[in-house]
Length: 434
Image (cartoon, rainbow, N blue to C red):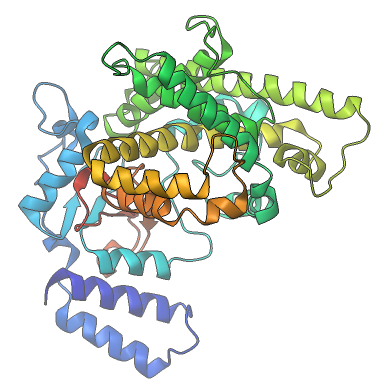
């Protein structure tokens, strides 16, 4: 029967015993526990790379001697699945809990559906330290939704999602986002060479478009990322892009390798902190400017045409709340959005016949360059939605989405174990971990 049945039975029994479903009775819980005993194998038998004495599996991430590359974590995941199967345990990570990878779509769904109201996520020690220690003077107890879990995460998320998830709020940005997209297309045309090819660093241009789009929502400002006269070395735009890239290029090193930064200030840690300071300071700069513009026209109030930033400031006049939300949007939005768009453009380039179908649909819904894109017309672009969904099915824009369970097996009751799940039917470069 194997680990899949065992994990399913254990999870069902655990949730039922905690009262997470009203339909479970004492007899059904007992039956599920009996099924666990009959089919489930102990956690110690979960396959995975064997840890060495003292150094565990941490050595695998070390340069030169290790066989795991943080920069190619997708290939590491693929190798783990091919070598060990649908359930893989990565134990012996110094200073960190074990990681359990599930390469099974059904189990992925169960983890999502059975999680509690406030799921426990790994706090990302490096970002947690930045928010709660290094910049506690700024964040205080209001650390946003990234690197936070529990009641504080839930309260902040509940407050901002009431504003962000309102359809009328989203519709306000159709026109500004379209303007950004048009500027991006124009920029792409301007930088093409005689062979109609864009430069090798075109991903940086996509980053600029992503930053411009998010800034229109989070900061209520046009940064001018697509302007030809943007100075790569001095502009806030490029500084913000570089800071986000620096954050993502170093967070994996700080989180997966031995945490030397906890003992002394390493060069990687210094770059990481400087990048986060840049993101925080520039976000606060633009939010303060937006707040001054709003106050100059009278008290901040909300109506049907109010922007997201206006709604946040009306909810909480402390500009730090808006800044913390903007920081989180930049950290999780710029790179992921850019990656998704780059993947979509690449896949369309590799399938010209699909590109032609999409082109015909767009020409039908938007027959001329002067046709305004509206929320209603956007809803009619069904093939475009299909292209986006199919690309994201193969090429996920995020690598991990981790959960920690404090009671995996009876003898592991006090040892937190992240449940990292990968959709096996997806290509690993588009893996999603839960």
